Length: 152
Image 1 (cartoon, rainbow, N blue to C red):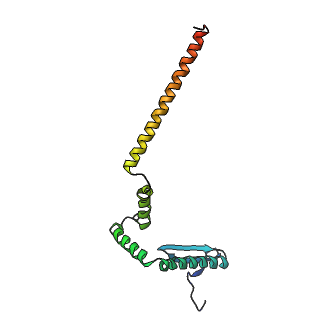
Image 2: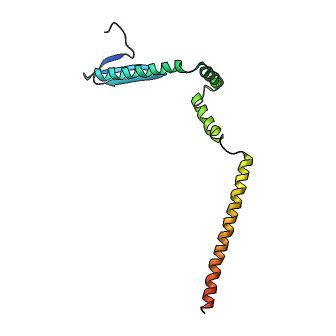
Image 3: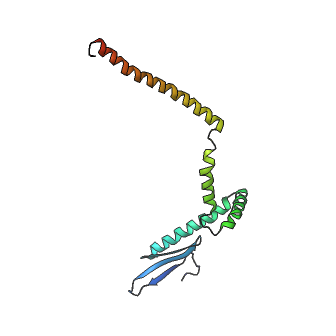
């Protein structure tokens, strides 16, 4: 065994069949990781990937500005009474806020919306009148042509 312990540990496991596997077993973000590999090389590669990801996650805490950390802490305190509900997370609260509030930030005001609606309605009415005139002409003109040439 190494003098220096490495994390996550890699265990040699011998099954009753005689087969030996290498198991990487640890906890990351309160989730158990337990994966078996046929070779020690594969197990060491996976352990290194887990170490790297864990280091990256740990470094993220230090790259976040203090103001944002305090803000996140306050938001989590507000969510604390709802901790029985696993879906009540800070990430989901932000997603909900974006979907139901921020995406409408560029929307017109009610007054502007009504003005646009009236403008489109007036334009549509003009187009409809023009369409009705065209339809009327399309039915009257052939009748006159046919009457003139004795088809009626």
